[in-house]
Length: 134
Length: 96
Image (cartoon, rainbow over all chains, first blue to last red; front, side):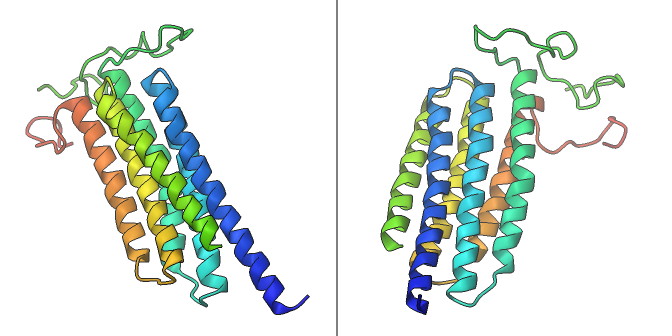
C-alpha cells in the first residue's frame, strides 16, 4: 500500500464527505419547497442545511490540511460560527413569525403559545409590562 | 475527486433553485427570510467547494464574511417584521 493509494483514498473520502453535505443541503431545500407551513419549513431548512454546510466545511478543512499543508483557522472559525448562529437565526425567525400571526398548518394539533403570546407586535419583555409602544 | 466536487456544485445549485422558488412564492414574510438564510448558508458551502476546486486559500475569508452577513441580515429582518424597526431609539423604553 503505497503513498499514492493512500492519497487517492483520502481524496475520495473528502469528496464523499463534501457530496454528503451537499445532498443534505439539497434535502433541506427540498423540505423548504414541499412542507406546508413556515414553522415546518424553518425546521427543515435550519437543521439539515446547517449539518450540510458543516460537513462541507469539515471536508474543506481536511483537504487544505492534508493536501495543501495549510491548517486554516478561518475554516474552523467559520464552522464554529455557523454552528452557533444558525439555530439562533431559526429561533428568531420562528418567534417573529408566531408573533406576527402567521397561521399554522390546518392539520397542526396544538399551539402551546396561543394563550400566552398574543399575535401582533409586542416587545421582547412582555411579562414585565410596558411593551415598546410604537 | 474533481468529479465529486463538481457533482456537489450541481446539487448545491439545485438547492439554491429550490430556495429561490420559496423566496419568490412564499406566502408570508418569514418564509422569505428562511429561504434567504438558507441561500446564504448554501452559498457559503459553494464557496468552500470552489476553493477546493481551484486549490487556493484566498476564498476562505469570504466564507467568514458571508456567514456573518447572513446571520446579521436574518436577525435584522426577523426583528423588523416583529417590531417594525431594527434599531430602537431608546427614548422612553427604559434605556433598552
